[in-house]
Amino acid sequence: MNVRLNRFPGGKTKTVTLSFDDGREDDRRLVQVLNTYNLKGTFHLNSGSLGKEKFVTMEEAATLYQGHEISVHTVTHPFLDQISPECIVREIRDDRIALERLAGYPVRGMSYPFGLYTNEVVQLLPSLGIEYARTVLSTGKFNLPQDYLQWHPTCHHKQMVENAERFIGPKPWGAPMELLYVWGHSFEFENDGNWELIDHFGEIISGRDDIWYASNAQIATYAYALKRLRFTACEHMVENPSALSVWIDIDGEPIEIPAGALVQLN
Image (tube, rainbow, N blue to C red; front, side, top):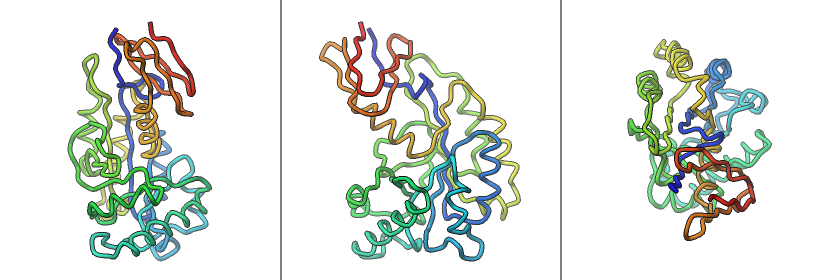
């Protein structure tokens, strides 16, 4: 019996997520496009900028991003590698508090302003309730992160179409789970006059049976739950201690392990 931890919800083998920073007014158009193609976005917001010129307002944020994820980007978008630990804590914690009031749910992730961070910043994040943090280091790869507090995306949205075309190709049995992670800023579509990129991306990537369309937090939460599975030494039984159902692969067949269940695999 070959047991592999390489399935997403529903037994799917691939997932797609997108994230955009800053909360600029162009998010309004971007969200409409994502909704058209049933894609999931994570929007990293600076609470200190909301309501200012060219930014979305506090009042509209909860409604605008409904069905997507609101995530931390700090209050004032500082260089985290140039400020004191006390200021880092305040920037992240206060942003999280403000965004949770808007979102109405626990905010557990972030992206690093300017993509800059240090080991000291990373070490602070768990104590601030942050479970994942996205960088701007595009890898061009489809692997899941080794460290969700240093989550490197696949590509910037300027390369989203060519990476989507690569991503939808067939994969061999037993291959690892694959993730296409696109990041960027909504105002760049407007500044560059290339809104057609997101439409073309949606036409290529949406509506596929083998893809799970998820927010950053959904992927991180699922990955943590999958790692928490408890197998017997002979892999004939598995216990899922989490409150989230997960899927595994047994001899090429997807098997659901329900939340809180002990499952016989033989």
